[in-house]
Length: 377
Ligand SMILES: Cc1cc2nc3c(=O)[nH]c(=O)nc-3n(C[C@H](O)[C@H](O)[C@H](O)COP(=O)(O)OP(=O)(O)OC[C@H]3O[C@@H](n4cnc5c(N)ncnc54)[C@H](O)[C@@H]3O)c2cc1C
Image (tube, rainbow, N blue to C red; front, side, top):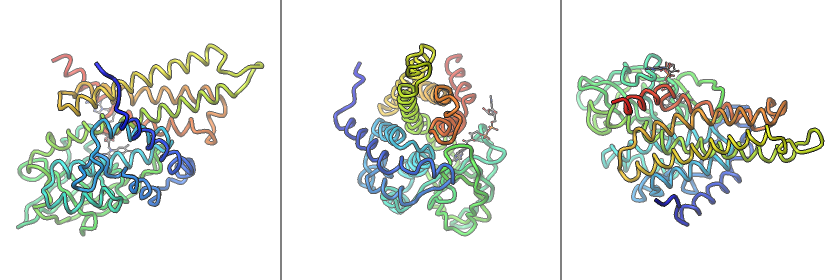
């Protein structure tokens, strides 16, 4: 058994962390307050190969492996302190660009992937509907065949990058069943609705999308018509539960490091609060939680990379990280005392950002449903 990463992977991690510290961290608190997505920052990161990390070089990407993508995402979160950026990047990668790469025709790949990789285009995925969340297969959006086109009608909600996406993979029901369509967002009838005012990850824009007689060519279908739920949507969830959740692990590291710094510097009763066992043990627990999550995420990611069965491991990694990152952020606030309750310190933002990990990409309850179904089978 070998837990090590290659020198190249370590260099990737270090360079991504430095890049995030230089480009993302300054202004992260302000972007959170104002709920601002910064296009210029996105372009700077894209110029450094970030936007196309999982996509092969022949389509303009960096050709990163599953582990490379986890490392990059983790390092960007650790150095950047910007959960919103991580959310937008994760959605752009694993539910925007990856389904086009894995299931698009050569024409769709050539049309979209180079721009998705160089920062020109932003990607998105729309499956969730007001009445179809955890029960992902119950969506109602329809796709009706009309000559060489399909006409889409329905409403999607919680769409990450909805207001800024150039291409959106939309799940709709044809008479053959659930089908994914790669939709150019300038298509008439693709209407960006209300922007949602979130508690965390606020630098990432999220919106409702209305499909109103949105006419798309048959050639925009990803994969096999009628089979998108199992072959594409569940595969997207799988990327979310490995590569995307690695960002939450990086966020946990940043929160622990901030807390250690604070506990060593803040003095009460004549000594640093880190010297009180009650505080030191909280930090020990935070460190244990971080390592448990990191190991779980990389085990699942490694199995995925090797092409081995990993549904159980991915759901466990997602559920653990979603819950323990919240616990760690709560303890960080406690250790910061009254200052932790203020917006001046990053601990409260870490809590608001971390909470999404137990909801998006399948809630903790849904992960436990999957885990229990597997172990009780
Ligand atoms: C910030 C953000 C970004 C998102 N980005 C996207 C995106 O880009 N594209 C997209 O398509 N979707 C996106 N989503 C949607 C996300 O995947 C859903 O919110 C999530 O799957 C939960 O669905 P729901 O919100 O409808 O909750 P519900 O399914 O209504 O769940 C409500 C509660 O009931 C529980 N519950 C439901 N069913 C069961 C069950 N069988 N057993 C036990 N408990 C159950 C849930 O765990 C939860 O606690 C995003 C959501 C958020 C908040």
